[in-house]
Length: 156
Length: 242
Image (cartoon, rainbow over all chains, first blue to last red; front, side, top):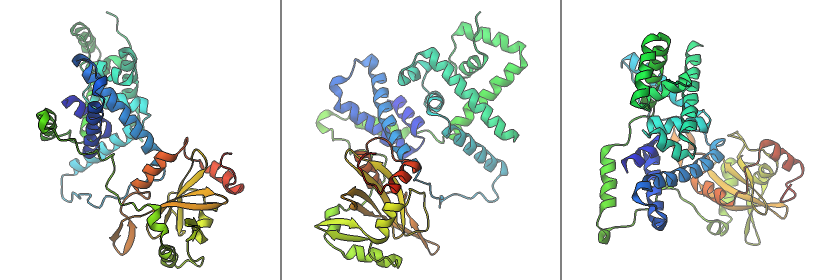
């Protein structure tokens, strides 16, 4: 259960969204209890439910993406006098996030599942319905690509 | 020992996805190759950076709460509150309530001081677009935002027709569908306005969640592209299907 919660967070990033996703998955699982497999497969089954909910949600979000522009954040905490390095670090992290978010989904998801979601390759491969070896090479390509992009940005 | 793609090895090593034997072989190789050590360092830093960039992980108390909920004795189990569907609360007035009065149409016309007068009229109990709203629906393509009194946000096909989402300068957003050569306004939503430094802006996204949900339920296929829209504008939104 903690694992499922963690994956929800890895997928959505936002605390509130991840709780919603988690709760929706639990609800759906409870309402489809009859279809639940034995306890050894239960975790995968729940992950799958969550994946389908999330894919559905992403499809809807993409539809609206081109018209929904984020508003400037009124509560942006300013860090006057704060250590410069801390704010530099924040800029750096924002850049990492931004590059990740613009990656194609088949590269972004493996990273989210393993790094943020703390899933094993086996679990993540199951989640994505691909073999473990295919997952490992996709993840490696995605991570190398991300690293290259970040380095190229730094150099320019 | 067979070793595959270097990047894959490094990433698996950083992710601790190696069997003991393979790990030892890899570390032996690592010791002799400084460029590989650098790559491991980079990927280790990237991994840490990603986790940090993602922000704080869900708190423990949150999990404790969920556990308590799930482990509650069955007789005391309450149904979970409905999930929020990833949306903030919204207010939504169905068409019926709106169509009951022409006052709104007058108000919308008045707000913008538009020379074209009211943007809505009632015809046989149905709310129809008129004036600036009608011409925007017929002639404008979708846009992020512009300075005209009406902005078109999205166009899409349904099973049997074509519809567009619009928003007005006063904060009203709505859904209109083509019907017998006119735009029938199917629903409108008044969005909350936030007052800020003497300028009004929408408190949420330009399209309220209730409208998004409505479109999600009606849409057939993907939304129209700008080219599709231009084609429809050229032929006067004539047919239900092109």
